Length: 226
Image (cartoon, rainbow, N blue to C red; front, side, top):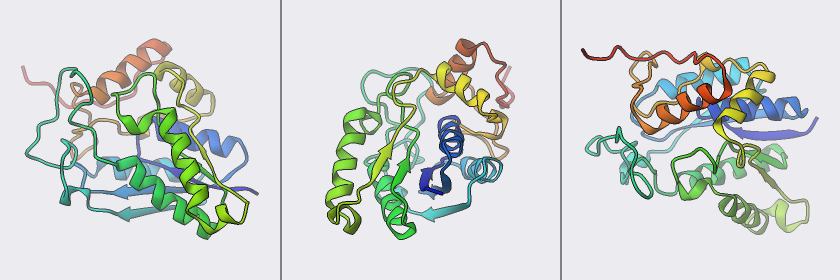
């Protein structure tokens, strides 16, 4: 059985990618990061997603990106925006996917896996530079230059199956594969119970995706102030 490392954040996209990789016959090793993000609800969701989604193993690695800050997701002094922004938003975490993929690459080499799955999307997304096809292609080239496996000719493949799909298309695909989106947490500022704020960019894109897919939104939302 082919092995794959799958980045699992606990959100909608990564839950779909895990289901897709499992459906393709991979033995999936789920990898999540406690990177100093605003809340732990997404890590709890990642555990549920990995368990229900059929991962062989799930590891959570601590990487304190809050030590460098620079993002509303890792610095409590920077507010999470609740209206769309021009350009790259302050919720962008500097070099996050580069760091995550690098660790995934190391684990894949140890596991003798040749595939790494990541749930980045370049259609209905927040404009992050490390969610684009050019980034994924460049990292794959790096992976095959920087590793023993790559140098010896049996290279790695970085798979981003959602990259050209709309959020609605992603949700429809996940539903076909039996993904329970009620188990996922997408919100940038979810509360301790994993309930979404309903106002941030992640919540907006998620809600639009369910509406576009014509599927009932299972998201639990925080009570809104009168």
